[in-house]
Image (cartoon, rainbow, N blue to C red; front, side):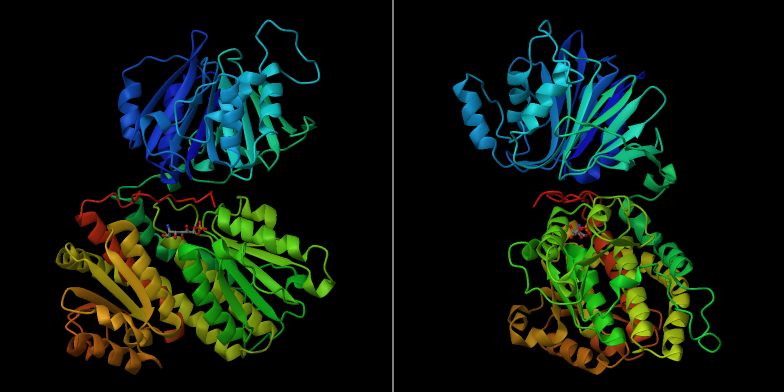
Length: 634
Ligand code: AGP
């Protein structure tokens, strides 16, 4: 939530800050602002609404400052109004702060500062920070304390020790115009290193056009950026030696490349995501007939993670949770290993009983979801001092291996999907499914629950998937775009699926509601008759996933039950299902596929349908209201 950017160097800061914020807008977009130092004073421009409003305001002004900070907000404390937008200033306009996170003890700090005469102009938790720093900052002419690199550094350091919560922030001061302070405590922030210029941002996406030399700050670290370089310290004030690394990102990956929305671009990237995963994880030497000692899947996980494995526990939120439900199905069916999937947001406060020889998997596309990271930390902590059979074994499944997730888990499975910008997850969901297929096959091979022949059949099926997805995109996207017209005024959708496609029903419903704001629910098809069927009438649309396989007949019966209650029926069916028109009013046909692999295809037309309904309703598909791509608050 919220995007932060900071710059100090040789160029004019304004444009770099605005461009950086535009690349971070997916993190929050209800208001925005920038602050620079002009003529010895903090100059700030803030605006309610999306970033283009801020740009319009900023473009009217000539600001030549070479350092500054910026923020795009996802409101936590205080409505999305201009007076709550960041940067926040102290009462004397000497300090400006942008913050991502929550200061949990801000009320208490506010009372203390108020008793000293400080006044507050916003309802935010952040506004206490500049005032705290100002309160501790000596006047520019006082003696310098030589233990610290600068008085500003000292005041920031002393202030952050008073804060409870999870936060990342950037700070400038009119008294120290050649310094930019950056702090991290449980919320992401990365530094960028250029030639005589230095950056900070909530995500590397903002830095990609300027530099590929980056360094993620860790929790409890504070950085001092000046035009001469970067110094990093811990919260005790000890200087740390840290080495930046090179990012091998193509700047084009964060462009729309001719698509109207990132979401559509990301839907179209799915065939290549599947190809990349196959290339990366299927062992080229695998041959079931020749070499039975060669593992078909190459996830490069250390052997201790597999040893005496008795159970798997998966922690995730939202779409990643849906992918995990498919994962459970696969791990139990292919590797015969009991698997539990829990909402990370629930786990922290209601953890399941601790079990022996358990592999815990955190699944998150952003790698920064606060609920998921906190759940993984909880799991790690509670197993820390236990007997070896209870020791934690943690892996993360993500497309962002450079994020905080990697600092918590033992190993990462990189889903190879790259960055996703549209708030609605599409390609990252498919890539998470792939990771689970591969893990299940890997475990099935090791535990000998799958024969070489069975594994080969799955792999052969996988190799056909990229072309099948391309076929859906080529033959169905236009058709679904036209079909979407019929649903623009729809009020209620119910998505149903059975077995391995039940999570796809949940995902279809989530996609539709989050971007089109149409009410949608997902159910196991067999559960309709246990309650939700009471909702059905001619105004409700039921989307039924009815793929050939062992649940097909039951899925059709459940669809017929809905039809008998006058519901409008859409069927996700195989192209060769010639009877489908007897049941369904509209079809979303997909190429024939084995039931086990079908989620890799059934989700695609549901993504496309949601996309076109939302786009035709004139909504901001990539930045739906109230949401953010990276949910870094609990
Ligand atoms: C997906 O379309 C949603 N925007 C949301 O549910 C998301 O999946 C959830 O917030 C979890 O995010 P993560 O995968 O980055 O952890």
